Structure formats: structure tokens, C-alpha cells
Amino acid sequence: MHGAIWAAINIIAANQNMSNSGLARFCGLDATTFNKSKRYSKYGQPRWLSMETLNKVLNATGTSFTEFARIVDNQLRKDGERN
Image (cartoon, rainbow, N blue to C red; front, side):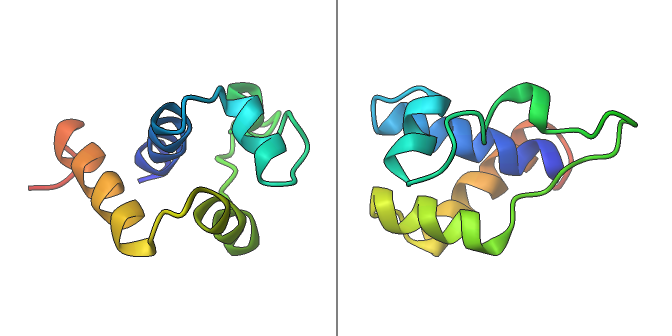
């Protein structure tokens, strides 16, 4: 699930013709917010997006939560994490 959520952020950025850092800035966030190096703690624990950050992404890009969930679901299916 963690990978699918981050993949959805990557897809949303690509759909907006932006890099991950461009998407972060567009959403009013620090440019490094979506860097791959920040997706895990230094101890290897997954870092999850906060609902506040996700809300900023969805609002700024005009993506509905339903669309976001569909992207995540597609990624889960692609990765074989869900039937």
C-alpha cells in the first residue's frame, strides 16, 4: 500500500506535467516533500503522507479523492498486492 500511494503521487505529478518537486511547490509545500529519499525514515520505516498533505495535492491539482483511490487501486493491482 505504501508504494502504491507514493506511485499515485508520481502519477498525479506526471499528469500535471510536473516533477515531484514541482508538484510539491505547486501545492505550497517544501520542494523536497515528495523526494524518494523522504519516503522512508533513516531506520527504514515507511513515511506516510498526512491527510493534510494529500488534501493539498488533491485540491491544487483538481484530483478527486475517488480518482486518487482509483490510481492507488490500479497500482496495487499492477504490483500484485491486491486481486
